[in-house]
Length: 358
Image 1 (tube, rainbow, N blue to C red):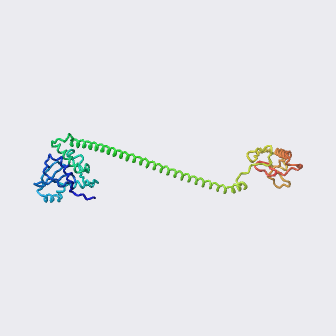
Image 2 (cartoon, rainbow, N blue to C red; image 1 turned 90 degrees about the vertical axis):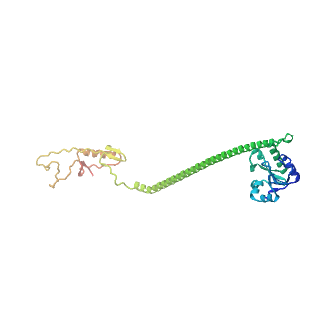
């Protein structure tokens, strides 16, 4: 920070113009020697040292000698009261700087606004600032302005303009703040919408990934099932071929009678089914007493050796069926010729009520 002296000295003509508006307060016999950074002046007279407070609009004899004055100004209390050291440091902290002929002035002056705000400080030429303050305080104390130009009115108007400007600035600041808050809320809403969209996209991607994984698993399972079916088919073909070629031992043989005439065959499915011929009604023969056949239903062999368990029926009704069977075979070409003899065929055993010529 640039070092600023608490005491400032100006040219004689600058003091003359500055004090020209303070004659009403009694500065005619007093000589200005230096000023503060805010335009307050220290004046010397024959009876001592006087302090002209341009902010308050007062002139008071404070010190009897120059030594006493400087002794007080060197103390912290004197610097704070007469030189406004703290206010000066605050102005410098805000970046305000003074030229060689300038002081800090309150615009508008505290005589009009009633406040001493650091924000209203501005660098102004010392002669103009001090003269303007004298005219304002003079009008406040009943002094008529020269040529009808009212510094007080000008100051009041300026104060009103500054107040309006400050109010407009405050309103603009409020609007800006409201706009910033609205923009912040809108940005937060957009961020929330973006986060929600990202969350939906992430959920959609996860669902798509899960669906793709499930589809891949289903395809893999289907491929495994198809491979298993192909393997089973490959293993089953030889077995099927063997099963087709191998005889079926557990299938029941059809009940057929190869001596049954072809006219009585009934085809059902893959095998011919022969209708059972009715058993011939057996008629018991009648023999006279004392014959060789002395019992019913039996046959006595020559020589008296026992009887056989069969009956000669070469001339029974069953032989007619056999003759028909031979004729059918001959007519179909399955038998070229049959040798007929007068000797009857040897009857076979009686089986299940049927006569068979095996």
